[in-house]
Length: 436
Image 1 (cartoon, rainbow, N blue to C red):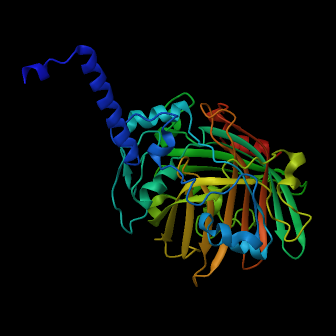
Image 2 (cartoon, one colour):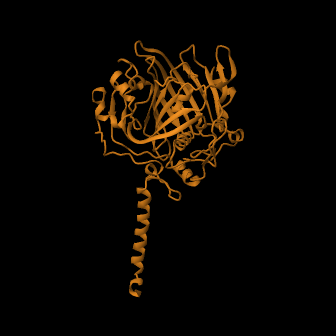
Image 3 (tube, rainbow, N blue to C red):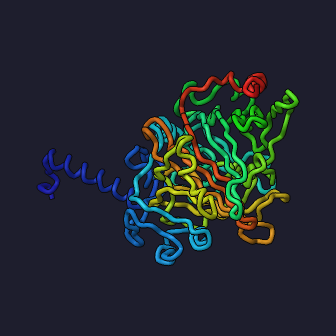
């Protein structure tokens, strides 16, 4: 017995190291983050979400999926995409999976504040905040409920600010392109809860007002629309967005409440609640996690952004004139069924598909009051220029109204993120200035 107790120091160190490695292995094998586990760029995906299953239903790189072979790959695609492939002749080009992680600052913030965010059930009181203790980073690594997924999206990594030039095409399946506009949208995505830009974690003047987001957007062309724009801010509390609209023909700035319950953005097929997939607050909805799946989604879409490439992003010269051309890969996805608490909400139900590494919404199905499939929202992202410094690059957005056979396409010209926009830029006077 005594002889067994006399273990060499070197052996003791070896045993200790093996025990530590085994403990880490158990944590990883258990499938997700636990309190006390440090998140890194290497373990981010499997810790905050889950690993994609690349073996059960493998999809070879370079495969073209279309209506004629959809059934062979239906296990790795949302069922509604069959409508786009079979009826509207859309094609999906495949590529290999690549992991995605957020910036170093966002990972550090997630580690620093992990476990502090708490949720309370506010029931039908959808104007009351349901989250407390959140400061910055991802609030709920390894989410267990649809509500936690929704909050992860709410505070998903998009960089602290951005400056986007883009186009808008109104497209009819029967007539082709009907109208075309160009816009600029620059914003501070995180006036509070910041992870990348100083001051961190908040810009004092916005924190004092309880605002978490501010932006200015205005039209660049055509000439008769040029200068029309809006300045709006988003409250930390679950309230409607408030702001101002500049009308060039009147040379006036008018105060406005930006709709989130059925108002279209700029007369397009996109409702305000469809921007980025969902523009509302988690408190406004019921969230049911219905699945954790490995699905094909465009998170490394290889979209050629730029004004000269806008019409290459969408096959506008071929019926139905809105089909995008981009690459899709197998991704770990949370599928969440969403039903509104708001009585006048335009959709009776939505299915939202969240990428489990970024918590960005890549695909959304919306149903009308009769329960019929109404709209599909598809967003394609390009790889970040440097994941340690910035988020995936927004490449294109497409909203399709299946019932009217009409779509709105948003190709991207340029996008700069984490450029350090001046907080004092977001004023009524600058909105008026941009409109001139």
